[in-house]
Image 1 (cartoon, protein in one colour):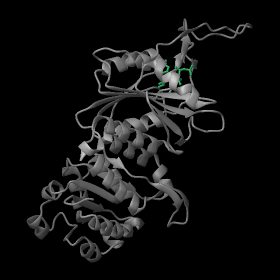
Image 2 (cartoon, rainbow, N blue to C red):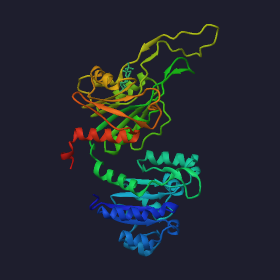
Image 3 (cartoon, rainbow, N blue to C red):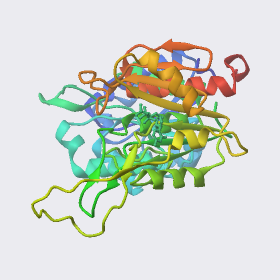
Image 4 (cartoon, rainbow, N blue to C red):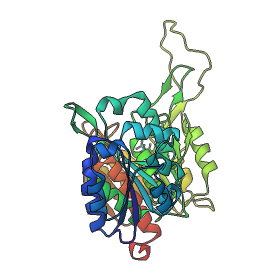
Length: 403
Ligand code: CTP
């Protein structure tokens, strides 16, 4: 329920603006107070009258309206909200937000706020994929703005692709998750490792693996959304830095270990990185030349980060979670790995060829503790991350106590 929550919807001029009407209705059904600011172009898609009728409040649109400013100044509009949601968020309003341009009431309110902001992008696939939009989104995420979607599908313009606004039900779910879960890990510190490591052979060659970093990055983001002060130590990946997370980029396993040790003490550690087990004993600083005989590489073992963090001591995080990437019988192999590493929980998954786990978007995992094992259904890596973050929150604040 969203009883007593004050939500400010910033409606910009996209074809999906009509979906706002359903969102307003659903928010009010949940008990939220909804106030709306429309951009000038939004009024071409939805009428202020219908928005006012559904929200039960005056609709604001003009920064220079003396009546608007007198009744409710732009600073007050942002102060009076517990959450701001830009819906739909066109490429144009996202660009203005990224640059801090405040040339109408909507963008002025967005610049004047220090309240949490969500945005549900809606645009043509080419605009969504344009380098300018990609870098604007990156900036906004880094600033902690939560981007909802977009979905893929048929578009009003006749094209197909990514850029369709997520459904009102999904936006409502994100808003509910924010109010229900947000803050459950407040006051706690979390450390997450993610991605592969690169172990140099010479200045141009390295040993690596197929890890994409998607799962680890999603976990860092999910923990941060629950309020944990989160540090992500990431090997080289193509993933964007998640918003609201302190990200440290490293290359090798040894650099990853040093960065993790520097991030301690934390309450939570989740080791999702696919750390290279070995490195070349003596990487050389000159490129190895082809001189007839193939070189042989002498390898040595890398430090085990999970095992190091799990060792008893003052700095040991209160909850250490590892991952067990296995082929074959996962449930047989993972429990002894948990015991060997000394971590509290291990999230085991099958990375056999054909499962598409490495690099893919879904994951089917088993959560193994000292005394229990449970199998989760196949779900997106995002959902695995959110489910794991909630389980971690349950561990620190059992659900009854979290009310
Ligand atoms: N791990 C780590 N440091 C390493 C190797 C692994 O922190 N040098 C962590 C991983 O992040 C993961 C867990 O240990 O959380 C298990 O990784 P996995 O590759 O499944 O296990 P290994 O220890 O490498 O064992 P093996 O490859 O023999 O199964």
